[in-house]
Image (cartoon, rainbow, N blue to C red; front, side):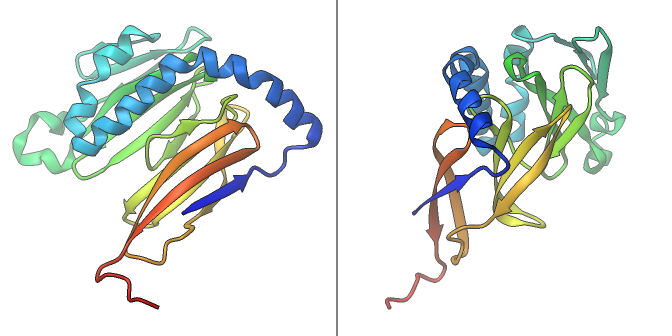
Amino acid sequence: MMFRYYCPRISTAVALALGAMCHAAQADGMSEDALLSEARSAIEESSSKLRAMEPKALAESDARRNGDRLELRLRSGKIRTYIDRAECEKPDEEAKCERYSLIVHARTRSTFILAKHLYEGLDVIVVDDNAGEETKLGSIPTFSPTGQHLIVFLENDEQLGFEVQIWRRDGTRFIEEWSGSPNSDGTYVAYRLVQWPCEDVVTVESKTSYDPPKPMS
């Protein structure tokens, strides 16, 4: 099933201005989007496969790996550092392990996107490239054409279950603008982005599974 979301708080004038930016932003961000897409495919298999992508992301970024330290060079020249916990090197304390890996340096959207690998689960951190401020997400996002919005699909989240979230850039952070669980009357819902042609409209497809099978009406 399909549903369409219309981003609020965008006036006609702003929508037209953002619309004029769409083509250029899409072209400039293609390599960034490719890394994000590859990361989403990798995490479906394992956290270790996502971590293995980091050298490729580092090669296209203003960041570096220094042992257990991931160092981001912000546009201000300051360094933002993320350090893996020492417990990651102790097999008997692996439940306390927290590791960081770079997913992408999305320069055209002024952000770094990192994965925080936990013993069970994954957090995604969006770091502003200018101020270093963080936004924590539950999954790897997709950018809108101009980078002013993000869409996130949660699946089997411990607290929220299956959910679609839209986040809006607010200065140096992103804030959640809308969330919902359309067509979620079954036991499992998979969401997929169909198209985001421009800033104020996004179309999403949902596929619902039932256990036991949905009875015939």
